[in-house]
Image (tube, rainbow, N blue to C red; front, side, top):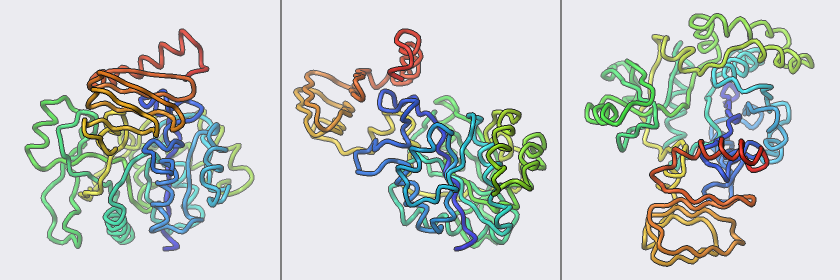
Length: 362
């Protein structure tokens, strides 16, 4: 267990969950499910099932450092890695991997977003432990794939090859192709073909393997972070990282490495997963009343409304009547009422609010 590490990525803004999620307090720091724990707290506790507390690292934007420390008081302060700019997932993975590798060249890491929902914790732990065992023995890059339940156009898809009989885990497959968010017809075809999984964005590998892959497939990115090999885990690290993030490019780990590498595997998993990217995805994970309304809030009175998402403060009395398929959200003096089918427009609402009302509400 001492060689197992977790890298939790917690730098995103989550603008599709506005008005609850704002740039000052994004969704990973919210109890969006009404469970009593924020999403990052749930993710952290999940990692404790297979990692020591001191082996868990959170990579976040410099403006959220204090929020992470407040919500995860048990985490050592030095394990909160601060990004001076948002540059997507590849720089985040490179920075944390070089740093951890410098501490422990035998390290095996899981890299996971801080704001995903995983309902089947035991199944998830079993899947991760299987991936850890493979990553310890082989030079490989593994991603968790989710068995699709619908032709969703909001997820990336992974096509896999037939199982290799030499694999100890019969849910482990070699990856054939990655496809970014397809249109509905293509997503439907993927589901029907039976050899595609959703890309969860959760990765497992040794630091040795991911560093070798970055150096092979994205030398430009590798050169930026390799330069700090003598300053990681020293007092000079922060100053070095500030400079590195000025020069490094904005790129995802999928584009930087995963889509180019040939030693990529996917482990098929049914773990009750959702990336909770939208209010619509949240709707499927909250209990419903008799009229199929998903309600978070203690004082909501509903007349003749159905199939709605209502998310309001527990001390706020809210009365709704005659709404069907709507999102009703109140947070910090902001009320949004929007048709469920039009939720992709929420990002436009945020941009318009910024222009018309300034940054106060976003």
